Image 1: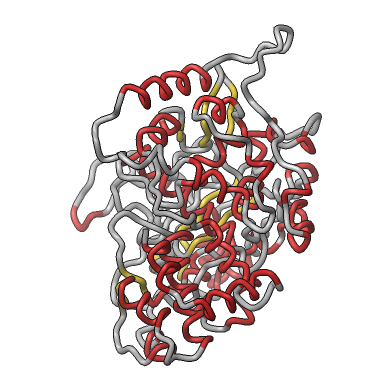
Image 2: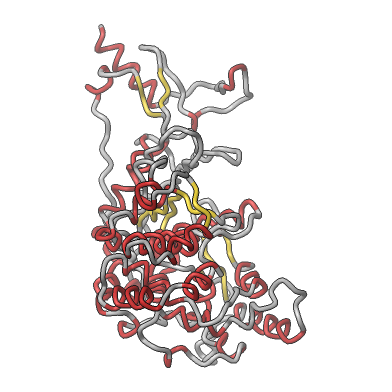
Amino acid sequence: MSLYKLWSELDEDFKLLINNRIDNNGDGSSLLTLLRLIPGKRVEISTFLLQEFMTLYEHTENDFYFRVCGQQHMNVTLEDVLFLTNLPIIGRPIVPTDNRDQDAFYRLFSERTSLLSLVKLRNICCDTNRNSDERIKAVLLMIVTCLIAPNGNGQNCKTSYVQFIEKLDEVNSYAWGAAMLAYLYQGMKEWKTKDKAIDGFTWLVMGFFFSHFRGLYTIFNITAEENQAHNKPKLAYLIESLGRTGANHHKKINSALQLQLNLVHELLRQEENIEADVRPITWHPYNLEMLPPHLHDQIQYRTVVAPLFCYNYVERHCPHVVAKQFEVLDGVELQDVGSDMKTIKFKANRGNCSINFRDHYKKEVVQWDEIGSRLAENFQPAQQSTPEPEAAHQTPTFEVSPTNSPHLSEQVDTSEAGENAGENVGHRKRCRPGMATPTSYLVTGPRVNKGLWVNKKFTHSDDHVKAIWAKRKRK
């Protein structure tokens, strides 16, 4: 609704400037393209239909997917993001080195505040007395807040995103599609595991199902989108066509929509029978002609097995789990693919102190930087370096992190209980020289004073081994 109102209030000259930037791949065009998803009238997503899709979603510690048509696994992937939104899926990750930029809005708009309401931001976009670059930056912040990382309780824009749009000539270098998918992944995870409302651009879920289940077009009397204008992302046509379905989503469901949802329920659970020519799933719905030419080189990265970044959220992209969606993975051995992607320790965006999320997620950033060797069809995991014994005497400070331990068994549960699990990951434990401190994943037993855990039976940890090395060095 916010972007629809924004576009309707912009002057025609500024709209022409934006469209020219999009058509000519100018500065900021990678994000400005999303403005073409906005239909000519106000539309809202059908929560009833979205709920029907989400009932099929499953999330375990290691995998997440939609279980459809019996035992088939499917999921929204970078390929869907690329074709549905025309956002770049590779580039620099959206992960900040500083999450506290108090002067950001003053530098951009001469506004001394750490939060800007979307209403205020929209007024800046429409202010013809400001220069075009200022207005473009305000539009980009609106897009990031409303489409890349939307949440149910946010009508404000944070300074956090300014660093990614402040230099207009660098905006197109970021992997905005990967960021959109990462934020949606964490939103679906929170919905499944904590019973929260789904944060993220949920129109991606709608576009995914309509692309892979063509019978949905028949159920909702929608003409196939092949006839749509090619200057818009593929998802634009579906958003406009489904507008009437979500028009009354706050009211009680009517009989006509209930009948359609019943048909959807049956379609998504109809098992494939190739001999009887029963094929509800379209496994490969996309082709090269559906993409603008400047995005053709990005197609090869749709099967990358790597972490995806959206600010402080980092989620795994696992195309090998839904390999049937990718023709290039037919007949490929995928047993060891993604073997180096362990549980990612979440870091909350809290507190008054500045946080360097790039440093906290440095292992994941390295994996992203190596995406050329991380395609599922020729996966080559990065070699993990083993700490040298000589380094043990240099400092008594050691990282307590399962991902840094070459001795960690894959059968050990490294997750931490509680809603704020992982917030303090990255902090260092200081050990007295010669003393062994069991790492968190080796500790069991009752809680004792000062919040520490006591082992029922001590097991040699990495810290213990390092302490022994240090003791021998001193002798």
